[in-house]
View 1 (cartoon, rainbow, N blue to C red):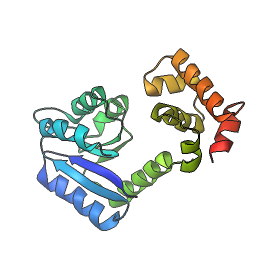
View 2 (cartoon, one colour):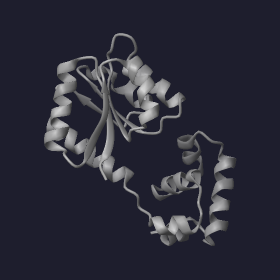
View 3 (cartoon, one colour):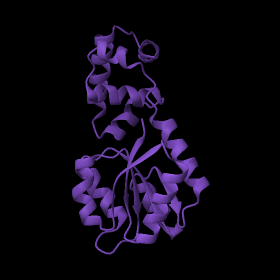
Length: 192
């Protein structure tokens, strides 16, 4: 299943180049479900479309890509963001804004491919969907299991999910009760 993506860049040639690279070199991996040259328009569209991945230009006239990312996250957007810019001095700010990656313009096709490969590795579903359904796990519980599979602690998961440590521990206990697993290792083996 292709990764759904949305592109936001006020520079039409840069946007067109990215579309060209995706359509010619990542065909079957990425599906462009929308694009915009305007951050305010994108702010309306992205929550409705909920793409897996966003390509955001950093410098735009009415709102920067960093500001747009923050507003989208405040609206509950959970997808990943790759910032694209001609300026490398934004890298620290981009990381603080939760960037998955940071690519310099003009986007190099090999760098783009590497970034998408990393994205696919990080987001691949490691679990057997039938096992998850049979245990009737909630979306929140599945998200928590996904973080557990990456080796994150309860504290780290709490930060990732914007919940308290106590809430994460409660969810973990509930998951163990539902699945009959005795610990996290047994749980992850059970769901593979």
